Length: 468
Image 1 (tube, rainbow, N blue to C red):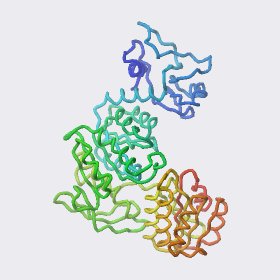
Image 2: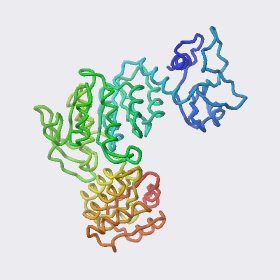
Image 3: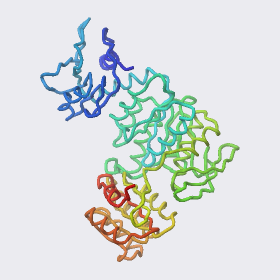
Image 4: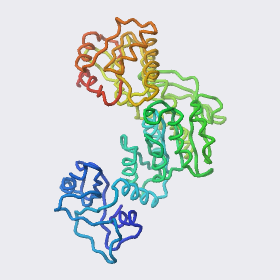
């Protein structure tokens, strides 16, 4: 168990005596504090230190002044020899709480002989993490990020959950600007790195796909040399495949290209029942079915299988894990009162994931309706990204509803491709979207609802879903 002595040693470099106070977990939200937890105050979190203590936290990391009633131990300078810590709860003053959290996480990670697998890419990180964790768990006790804990705060919090029972940690690593993944790797020390693909999301910050690729390549550059390190790379994405030249680790290619180490063909959608496919590895061929929806899921499956092979799992373990996987894309299928099937893919949106959603819609029987919101953070790819979606929508859907301003670029591209304007509704109010769908839906229809997370299009789905 993490202790006060560990926290102080990680921050100051010297281990104090009489500091065996045990810490159950670390949190950054005072509402999530539990007995014996460590509350890390980030920015406005300093106003909630007392609330965290009331909820059971025994320690807090702070870098600002807090309520004068709170006892504070200053770690910005060395503690006197023989220093006696006060009775908890109390706060530890540091230079920067986020940096202190990262130092503690890096210190704690080094105490455990675990294999760490890092995952980055524009699309598919979370589904890859979930499916890989399920397969790996057939043999190994596996730690993974919860939800989207994939940044400079979330990843350290995840690592502080490590304990002696874990064999592996599989960690999603988010990228926003150059240096982000390098920082996460310096904390987590991954031996295996998976890169999914390079899309256009976050191009508003990075300016180009090439710059995004350079940022994500920080993962493969940080891996230890072969044979300890392995980079698992998407051969079907040229910007990812090029990363083989940027690492001294062993390279394992996956994809649809038969030149890959692990590749798939004969991919056949089974609708909501999953996909069938043939998978090839060395001289072995397996005909399989997995419960993930949509042909685009094959790359998720290949990534999960690849890391399982790298970690020495047998095909029996891998196939069992695939067949019994409960992981699914963030897409969820629900029924409406009219008997239509609603594909809720509202977590977020990029051109790549929008196209994947439309491709899935195309694979399913029934009249096809798409409710599409705009996409954010595409930078110089904003127009072309929305246009690509509009062109594909024109090929797939029978009825198109575009939601809010940016999505107008989708409808304009669809009309330019010959899609009838009378089959398009451009709406700005979620209630208007719900009313429109209620008026046109009938049994057997299939509806894709997708857009940027900030549009909260999940509210549209909730208003239409039949409550059981």
